[in-house]
Image 1 (cartoon, rainbow, N blue to C red):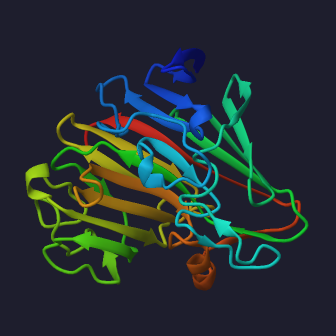
Image 2: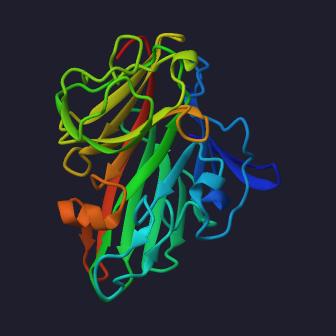
Length: 318
């Protein structure tokens, strides 16, 4: 993999290239990944905001005031709210976590792009390495260390927002439990609080009546939903785009990750048309709720947790 540095819109941009794909990262904007391009199909998979420019926002900002695009890291939770346990009980967790608005330090630029950031309200070191994975895709490798003297609870999500095309399909290779986190707008039928995705959920949304199919913009006015797919054991989910006859596979170790956040935004939030497929730790967005459900993770004092996921582009269906 070749890693080069350039200045883009006044800030450092790191470009990672193989013969199969190109990725671009902005460390001073929370390590945001803004590009994942399949060099064979020409498909730029990540959504870019047509209205909001990339810009630095202060800590604690409303995430909705950001560009809300590409891949942002959300830690130690996604939704804002109080930390649920001593010694930090009641301390506020920022919207979409602490690190998406932070400036990350670049500590290595070959053979991987390794970056890190420390907590603001909580004592931790969050590290991420972007490298070539075992499948020759883009590997996201994480390492979090608790710098404190008490157990530290956390959730996490790779807030990955993908550029949809009508008829694009989410492929889940097995039955999965689906839990509704929240919904708004004019859904054809109410989304139940829990149901099975097998092989696709019976909730009208896309062209074939499935949540797993992207509807056309003209038929998707004013609805959005956040769901969690849990108990995933196959080790992958995918997106298939019939417009380019190409796919994107999200690979992971089910012993580390078995939850996927699914954000369906068909002009229901800020009038954007985009899709979130987000590897996650925790089955709700807020840390208190995840702790209550037993899906938040507890990191021992001075302890370390590690996990990874990989993006693999390819031709044809998946």
